[in-house]
Amino acid sequence: MSKHKLFLLRHGEGAWNKENRFCSWVDQKLSENGVKEAQECGRLLKEQGCKFDLVFTSILSRSVQTAWLVLEAMGQEWVPVAKSWRLNERHYGSLIGLNRAEMALQHGEEKVKLWRRSFDMTPPPIDESHPYFLEIYSDHRYTTCDVPRERLPRAESLKEVLDRLLPLWNGTIAPEIRNGRTVLISAHGNSCRALLKHLEDISDEDIVNLTLPTGIPVLVELDENLKPVKPRQLLGDQARIQAAIKKVEDQGKAKASS
Ligand SMILES: O=C(O)[C@@H](CO)OP(=O)(O)O
Image 1 (cartoon, helix red, strand yellow):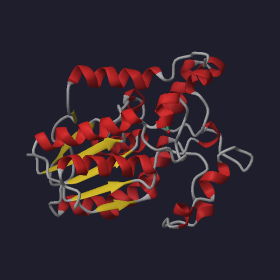
Image 2 (cartoon, helix red, strand yellow):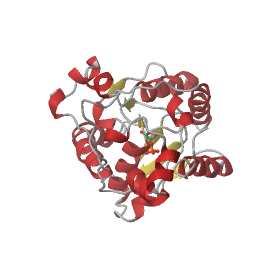
Image 3 (cartoon, protein in one colour):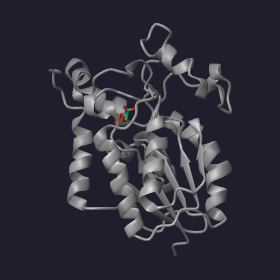
Image 4 (tube, protein in one colour):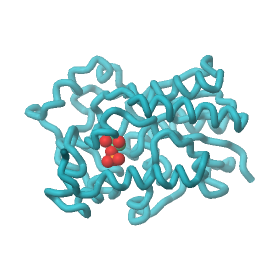
């Protein structure tokens, strides 16, 4: 029997989702469309009568901004929000800033799909010569993490995302849920995929086929052991959701940028 409701949310569209560049740890804000998606999500959750006790976000602005907009649209601005780098988007290493469609042209769509969606492939690490290295590692936010800056990742597979996310899940989020709190996690495509893999025990092979659209709340109903009692539900208009998933998948199709 369902005992707990957990809501996962990939932030609304960011400026680089639109430009089709790997964004990862670069701190892009939401696009105009992303703002609308987050507000729409809040309206939908309000309509469904959701009441949150606690929200978790990453320390990237697009996930924080999404949480604010959702809570504002729900009239639940008072709900406490906790932030952790452990919910950040996957670190895409030296791929950060590159255009996915151009990468598919150069390396093939299969390779880009593996980089984007496989469980244990780590992209080449970022180094000091990378155009976004300084912007990321000199940012004050990374001095506030529970690991020293030198030990923060330089690239991550989905498996490594799950490894850094699990201490937050097991140590903080899961106990709150067990205590009866209704939690919203406003995070990123790959941090949500990693958590879903863990909760639903998705195999390394099958996780390749899980893509999450921006701004669509995912409801996971859990039993007292925090095991899902039914398939996850992506809330909203199902035709729109399928189109939004296809849009994200198509970002990896080969195309020269104009
Ligand atoms: O750019 C990123 O960091 C992520 C999410 O936007 O990209 P992808 O969908 O390719 O994993």
